[in-house]
Length: 226
Image 1: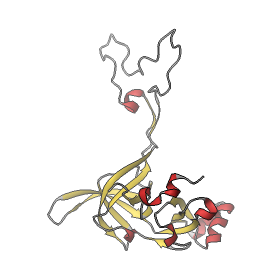
Image 2: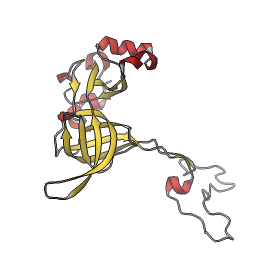
Image 3: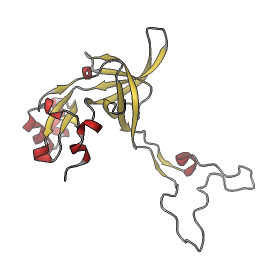
Image 4: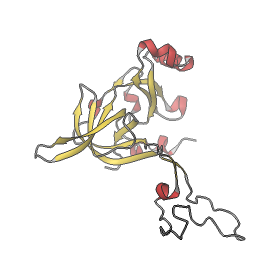
């Protein structure tokens, strides 16, 4: 059975997308003199490694590679099955493989390159990335819960709080806010604005902050709600 995305591609799929890497944050000045905080993103170049079609895979998509390995490190860092995958496409081995599902995936073929100039200044985009990892965190920091009384006699300051009733229901309910791993979650920020495009250096300057640490992988696509 075909998925909703495969049957209605024009309603929910972006028209253009690219894989990038977060470089840093800085600031630029607009023509009117206003200071704009921007995130610098290395966007592409992304090479099409595999083309999926409705006939062979049940849906249309492009698998693209980003951030090529140095030739001298390929044999050391890339496993043979993956190396064969790149060899079949006649492209160099790359660190990151991502799948792009676009409205018109048929317009590109294996070996084609997607560059930062697919976007232009003023474009509205959505950016998806993994948030920074914070390690193990308590309920106060992880879920923004209130602390207990901070007086000396309380002896209960940053605990998780009441867990459940004793005899009924005699268990902890699912989704109870507990201490645990914080961060490394997939987050999408919508309707960000492209301030500047540097096609020669494959850089996008995007207004505001984007998810993840410097060096984190980002999926960039034109907004589907604009």
